[in-house]
Structure formats: structure tokens, C-alpha cells
Amino acid sequence: MKKFSFFLIFLLLLSGGILAIHFLKPLPEPKVNPIPKSLPPPVAKIPPPLSPPREPPNPTPNLPPDWKGEPPARIAIIIDDLGFNAESTQLVLSLKIPLTVSILPFYPYSKKSVEWAHQAGKEVLLHIPMEPVSNPAEARPGKGVLIYGSSRAEIERQVGEDLTELPSVSGASSHMGSLFTTDSEGMRVVFRTLKKRGLFFVDNLTTNKSVTKKIASEEGLKYFLRNVFIDDDLKRGSILQQLEKAEKIAREKGLAIAVGHPHPETISALRDWIPEAQAGGITFVRISELLDKEK
Image 1 (tube, helix red, strand yellow):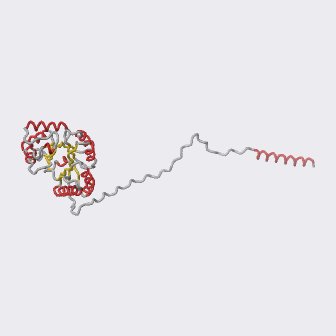
Image 2 (tube, one colour):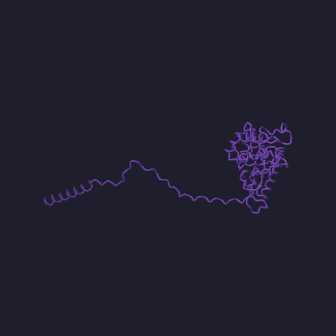
């Protein structure tokens, strides 16, 4: 009986030891990813790029009723009499179209006006002072004036001085000159001098007795005749009426030359009229761009 009791106690102790060993065994550590030394920045979700927007179709211009789809008519705007002051030059150069400016020599801002005009991409002409029918002292054509009946040598000298004062020009135009442009021999000397330098001439046509067309043809000089004076009358309605006249000529003949001056009234009217003319099919050009057209 005692042997059985000892055997039972031995079994109980053995079972307890087995259970203790089982429960006291350390559990394995869970597997975790190692912590990186530095975390990468979060990646933002970037949406796929949008396809570029389609350009809107060109707007249909506001064409006049008689527009028949012919190639755009061309107008060359020339603004004369620059060189007196900086303000008038800058006012003219603010016009955002191909433009030609005609600059008088020997004035305080003559050379600067040429420089500014070239920087603004405008074309420059030498505005040659020529004797008018009225007394030059009263009309005040300015320094460097060509006088009717002067000798060939005197005219050559004076034109040469004018061109030396403003050398980087594309051509020349007449300032006043209602008397001098009727002098065949005087104009012949002028045209030969210009031709030697590869320049052309624009007659502002201050008299219907001008001989420039005949003499230029004989001398083989490229030349133009003004079609419209924009601002003989500074009333806004009159300026706009003259611009409409230039537009009509351009539509009929393919081109027109309109001459104005650096008056605030002129520039204001041009700013308002230019977009309307462009919408109606008018193309603005520098005067030299018309050299391919017969006048």
C-alpha cells in the first residue's frame, strides 16, 4: 500500500514538472520589420497631366458689308515733324503697328528720336525742309532748308548735311516745299543725291504743281505720293473722316499712304481707329514695304 502511494506521488510530481517546463518556456519574439534610419518622404499622388487646351478658332473679323474676301488692303501711316521734343516722339512710338516716322534734322531731339524709333521697330525717314510758297522766315520750315533756285552745289551740300545729321534712314520726305517741289532742276539734284545712297522719296504733295513724279521717273528713283493728310483739321470727327478716306483708297487700289503729325488728337483717333480697320481686313505696313507696288 505504501509502495502504491509513493508511486502515485511520483506520477503527480512528474506531471507537475512537465507542465511547469511547458508554461515557463519563453515565447518566441514576433517578427517585425526593422526601423529604417531615415524614412523616405511621402509620395504625393500626382494626377495625370491634362491634355493641352485646344486653341479657340480665329474670331471672324467684323468685316464691312462690301467685303468680298480679297487680300487685305495695305495702309502706310507716316507721322511727320518729329525731333522737336521727347514727349511727342514717345507718344507716336506708343502706337503698336508697323509705322514710319519722318524726323526733321538739327532739332534738340532729332538724333534721339531716330534712336528711339529704331529701338521701337519703326521705320525712319529724313524730313527734308523745303521752301514753301510763303516766305520761309514766316513759314519756318526749319534748319537745313532747300531754297528754290539754289545752285546744284548748294543743294548737294545741304542735302548731304541733312543726311549726315540723320544718317540711318530708309528714305526721305518733303517738309513744306510747295515752292521747291516745283523746281525741276532742284528736285533732280535731290533725287540724284538720294539715289546714290539707295534711298527713296515721299512727296507730301503740298502743291498740285509738284514735279516730283516726272523727275523721279526720269531719274529712276523709287518714290511715293501722299494720298491723305490725316489732321489738317484737328477735330476728332475730321481726323476719323480722313482715316476712313485712306481706308477706302486702300480697298480700291490695294494701298494708301496717310500722313499725320504728332498731335495728341491725331494719336488718340488713331488708337481708336486702328483696331477697327484691322478687324475690317486692313494691314498696316511701313512705307518701304510698298516698294513692290507701282505708284
